Image 1 (cartoon, one colour):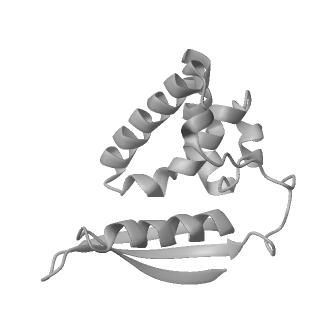
Image 2: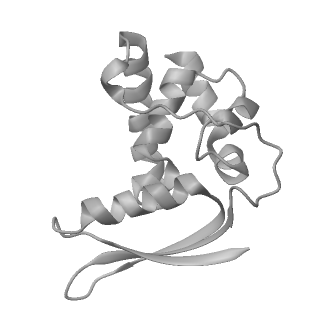
Length: 149
């Protein structure tokens, strides 16, 4: 298990690039657990400790290649409803757990779910960025959302 410490600064100048860096890291690695703390200093930020395995070296019971949607410009009306429902769920989950939304799932992961529409929790393995941790913690809820929309 490897450890990575990241800082997500909240100022307009840095938030986009810091979130992008985190999204890329999450897509390329299997996060086993994480810790976060909000630091309020001269410049407020989230300090994040990620315990992870690289996807290429992780024990692989997943299929390759993983499904990954590239953009939301090609969504049909049903997929837009699914994506909106997933984003609402993610916001509520992040608020309940006092975490930034991208810890729950990145926009790209939600977009991939909306397009791929997995029918079973296990099929979430096909979504790039979804490892054992996310599937165990959020899989059932995501499938329930897909079934209800």
